[in-house]
Length: 247
Image 1: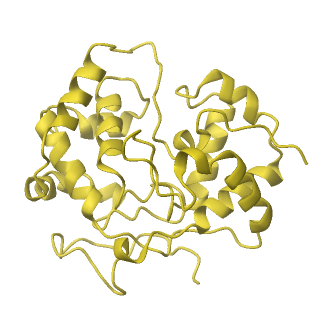
Image 2: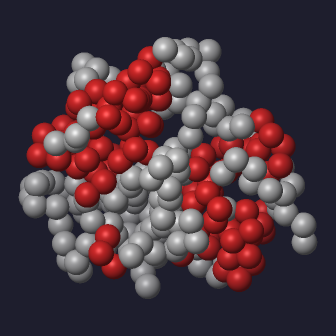
């Protein structure tokens, strides 16, 4: 089976960590705020305070949920987090809820972006992310290694220098949903060439490569200890979240 190339790192966009091109593009704001925040040293202590605005959706641990409604953001590369917050704030990524929570009024200045990114990036990850049951992991591995590994790394670790997101430990349903949004045009941040290329993917191709991606696990030093909960938010209600596929 011939599968179209992902082109310019489709999985970066499938994760929701891409560059949006919208009518509200502010070309001056994006590089300025992104580069400013990237040049600053993040204060994770202040980032914990700012993260209070994030826990309702992303969870106290930053693990999202297996339904695919919210991604696991714990342990994400700080440059990736900074880039997305800067994009959303400037209207270069279409996410109305996130835009409200990431606005200058809610979040603060470039230093605040650096601070919350520093906090999120150091949170330990869960290895109980949502998976696909009965998927063709062998085929998914073949597609991933051929099309995705050059950008995202063999183990989905991302690229710090190029701000390519880490995708290990991500929820399967979230990956699939974002992929389809790219292909049907709902995600306007997709590179047009890449959109044309992924039109060739069959449903089986998509399911297989996303299932394999979701099966990639973070290294042991990035994982939370069994039973760990975030001590910065001891009273947060955690029981509402869907339980990912048990392993």
